[in-house]
Length: 321
Image 1: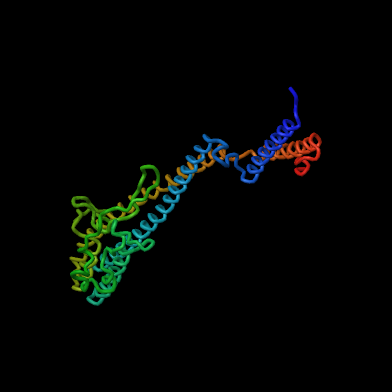
Image 2: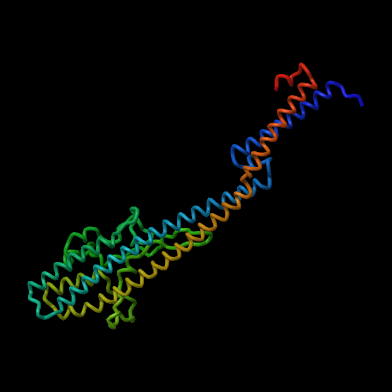
């Protein structure tokens, strides 16, 4: 077979073009750090990269959701602690007021303190997290209790101003922590501020009255103290204990949700790390190998141009040198 100059020229140009293509691919891998830069590089690998990238995105979002849920639940728990402290102080004042040796002026002074605790409890009941009311279930844009009740004495908080008669939203606001995993991050004021279920016993051993709630008890305590009714004041202690028991149980439930959110955050972090490693194995280039091959390809490309220039003098190859 006779090799013509045209055939030789075509073969040399083909080799040079092939070397340039390999060099371009290696330069691209070196610049991006990825061995898959276009679908044609590895069609199956591209599908794996897309799947793993989506999974990483979901895991990261779920992890952030868990972090946000913990923050909100921690706020709910700390707010519940504030409410329990207010009611505990009221209980102490009730025990003090039940002492028959207290003078009428002493009783009125204690009543004034109870009035302040009442106002504070209304403020706590209308607590907000990121602008959303935490004790009104799914109705997070509406205050569960009349805000004006935080600025008047309990005997003035009647009718529409009476927080003890309000029914809060019982729905729950859920946060998605994973595929099919959700936890509530809201609370219902009716559930939290009420007494323990009827028939149960408080920490003092007395049977509870579930029709009572923290607001009504403080209002009754305020009135009894102002009237100097030590017997009525003393009888309210067991009811306050019942509400405190219920508050403690509700807070324990929130604590278990915080633990669950923490576990899901850890799980999502571990999954994200694992998937990121899988993605790296599929997508990332071995830079040491790429740089070695790149140097070799550059040498081959230069040599092919020089050989072509010698084989085909005064041709386009001379201008490629």
